[in-house]
Length: 83
Length: 502
Image (cartoon, rainbow over all chains, first blue to last red; front, side):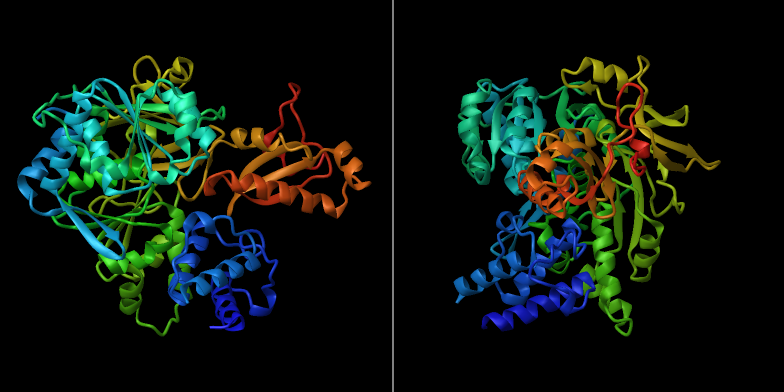
């Protein structure tokens, strides 16, 4: 999967969780403050990312994620590793 | 039978020895351990601890939920020793301080927190030995028959809980405290019933109600490996019962509501709840009634209860037979209840012995004749159902059940140079910091006291702070004030009036 493909699926999932339209979600959107994820929404979201991209998320590493861009970069790395 | 934890487990081992006591995931495969195996493993740890000189000692545990954690815990509390379970998500410094204050002489540690070892060796001289959980099954006592039985009044477990002064307090729970709480909770299940345990195991609610209670009933306790997989694991383990905090119920509710109304409810229940779930016990914080109604549509009953670590922890709970909307149920049979200036006071065999080495705090919490100040306001109705109506003490109860002392976090945030005054409150999505920036610092740095860059700079500082803290202590929103907070004549900030600009 290329970076754009990952990005589209990823934004789709963020949009589902945050109930915001895809064009309202920007790379610097913050999960907590802007997208109003609770701590547990974020954990469940990570679980769904694992299924969506068939990767294993490291919980401690993932806790350092603040923005959409941070998360996307991390997933991109995981997908690359998995290939 | 004596009122000790060992006698909660022994009858289950006797009656259901070959049945699974716990189940967990290893590389996505389900593993199980029977009651007999769990008991034999715990006995071996107990013999080892007694043989190596830890009788009467405090033994700390730092690690996430795992079979080894549970084996270590039972090894300790089935003997005359005291377990001190600590929150594995705390920063190193906090853990070191708690280890020092708890007087632990042995530490069971998760390999994930190996980084702690150096500091423990340097700063906790009272800790004679550190054992990794991964090595626990290899512990080999010379005399595997060596045994000693605790007394009901011995302290079995010390659980640290947030104090209103910002210093965590070690709640001393005796063997009798815990035993009588377990047998007084009016819940029974068929042996073999699967329960999914999703809460942190160092919390009294999880440790006592999932593990001690569940195992005393012959249930199969399934260990959730991560909150990332809480819903997925329902379809892995197919539990009938689970204990949750309101935040978990709220998160699942959003998933239920997100599914199309055209999908039959039974299919939704199968997908989200794994198809077998009938009951959720909710505790740790107040749950809005709308969730109880919503879940009922999917065939899942939610029973709200009430408790605190100081009471081992259950004080009251709703059950299938005795249930009233909006209440937290009826007080347990071993709990007496009264009200003093509206504050709920409780007394009974599950009320703690006191706070470890904090005589003043203990004196404030416990009256000489054994009544515990709960810090909550409440009332009883004519049929004996308890309602919680507010709080007396200044402690934020988050919807994940964590009690957070705002003073503790304010103290840490106030160290940031840009912050002159700060008050922390609980918001819908976690903690909110109300900040009055230091006018001189901001003027110096930005040329303007309320330059928009101040917010960015504060956010950056708060992000850095969050990284050092467990998730439940993260600041999830910042409100910037243009004036100092209103204060009392003794210069204390008036918390009730923080919305008013001076």
